[in-house]
Image (cartoon, rainbow, N blue to C red; front, side):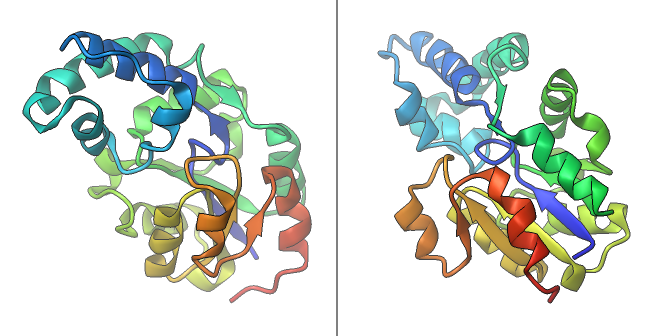
Length: 214
């Protein structure tokens, strides 16, 4: 195992507060009541256009997206938090010589800002998003771009995420998949993918140490 590609929200960070703040600003623009963080959490992961369609309706996607981006640009750093054990997990993997990168349906520019704010950006060779790779997950384009940046083959890599869509993207990229609890999908839903499911990100180094490549 020479390379690990990570999803962002729900995997490396808890960004649901900031996303909820921006979602509710968009809803307020159309006189809609606010949603809870848990409600928004369950809707995140398939890209901003899909999220806006879910929370403000298809007729308001364009206007809602503009409001969301304006507010999220202001709050994304202060209202996004590291998952427990983030820095220790990344350091343990780097100590073993594992290359790392990020492939998220969040725009890469936001991912970079968040990871820099949390002090972990230097761990990653590449930060890919839909605007850099040209497609949203479950399309494998951004994972494949990360593999190229790390100079790691698919059989030497693992994709780590928190949603069923991550399992689909990893499978299409031809890499091993590991899913972690705490994100947008319930543990039982993750287990239905047939992929390994870990209780937390902190369990990842130990799991990978005993998992053969390929």
